[in-house]
Length: 221
Ligand SMILES: Cc1cc2nc3c(=O)[nH]c(=O)nc-3n(C[C@H](O)[C@H](O)[C@H](O)COP(=O)(O)OP(=O)(O)OC[C@H]3O[C@@H](n4cnc5c(N)ncnc54)[C@H](O)[C@@H]3O)c2cc1C
Image: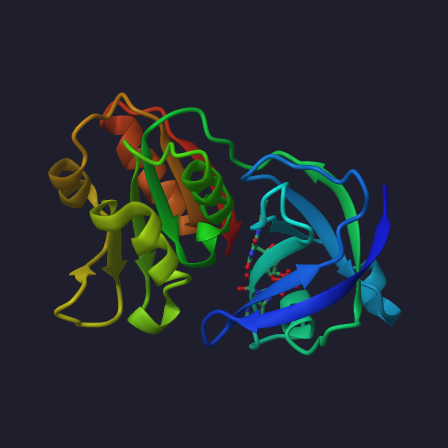
């Protein structure tokens, strides 16, 4: 399935992340955490497919993606950052990326938070957030995506970790074995991990050694 859809509006989320509100084709549905492949409907970009996660919910009248742009090379995310409302994207079929299967620990790095945006928005709407913890790691405080919204949804159960900034208001990373042993009360609960490949692989390995069975998604190199 390929559908050409228009961008309705664009919002700045951080210095390099924007959210795109997009026309929703009739009957288009997905589960929170699922993704699709997108292309820009323009010239050579039509053939360049990249995966992105829905951050809207099914009962919203439009689709939303929250996308970090890499300006250091001429790729799709850099090109996306130049688009304006009225420009078009090509949407494809929905496919599974990461799915909620019970109260547990969410560990995200940078733009790896996007599947958890949809999952937490849905849990919040359904009144089922309780029992979940979010650990959200970023290089600096400027990189944190939707902090106010996560604080509103999770309160003290939203934990922020910085790896490249000394800031008295935040914990300092990395998320290593000592960190996990200190923070995690129950390694038999579900773990959901999403972020850059090194972070995801390192944490998945540590958690497995500690007896957990994590669900992980690698997002970027
Ligand atoms: C299932 C899934 C869902 C995703 N959902 C989202 C989402 O909702 N939001 C989001 O922001 N991202 C998401 N991603 C990540 C997103 O798909 C990538 O960031 C995107 O494909 C990068 O496309 P690009 O053309 O800009 O970069 P590409 O050219 O495809 O490069 C891919 C990666 O390699 C690095 N890279 C490649 N070439 C260079 C170069 N010359 N110089 C420097 N770095 C380079 C970049 O860091 C980049 O991350 C998702 C990934 C997956 C697998």
